[in-house]
Length: 193
Length: 122
Image 1 (cartoon, rainbow over the protein chains, first blue to last red):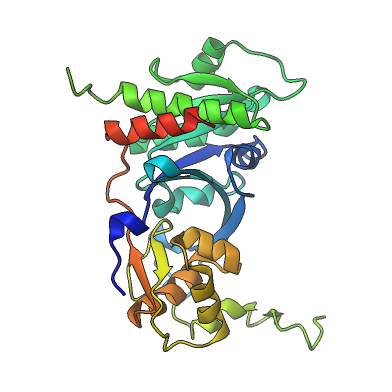
Image 2: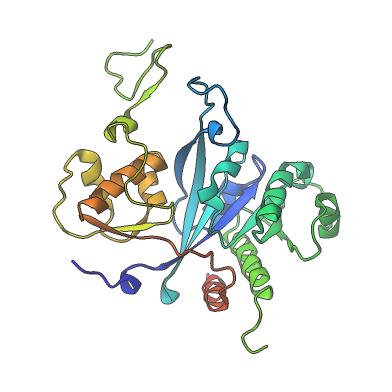
């Protein structure tokens, strides 16, 4: 059976939701997604990073990295947006090249009570040249910092947007996604320019 | 102590866990077709030469285009195991696939504007 690809297959884009463990990534994915968040896992072999002179030794410290993801279908434009929540507990997701390659951009979730938890993600996206914004998750009882205080603490480039977000709220999560797309658009030269 | 009817994992201190999904693939860990988390697969309707339960289940899931990540989640299998299964099905033409676009689209103004428009309607 022959398929006309553009008719059958939608355009797919991927946005990563990163940040430290317990910062609300899965909650964010669940709030924004049109489907119940799905979960899958991959086996990452730590031996693939460094040089292992002890070849044959069966201590490759393989680790299973789980990730949650959700989906937003934009039917009238034939686009499917996938939201991948990067695993926060495991440092090994950084080795999952496939996860970050081809990502449209990223949202780094931050909890002002422990901002250091998102340093790794900020650093990772900066080094890879993946555009991102920081979404400060407004936990109940968390002290409210001004966005500029967060920027200073994270040593963020002035161009990186900081938004406030309630990860439990669909509109708030969607609004953070819109902010990211606007940020990406601002970096693309206008066709009329 | 594991019970004899526990067929999910055989625990043995020396051997370590023997994970059943990998036995589905007969120990193969590399798919024969290049598949990404977001590669889309769809059942073609052609009869499959692969008729074991996992292959049939995958075929049943993909009457509409589905990403590799979604198939893995629905089948509760690790991503790499899922890729091997799906590659088998692409090989025997029971499925067809489309790789994700080579670039992320972050420089594609038209795409970004469509995306923003879609997100504004939510």
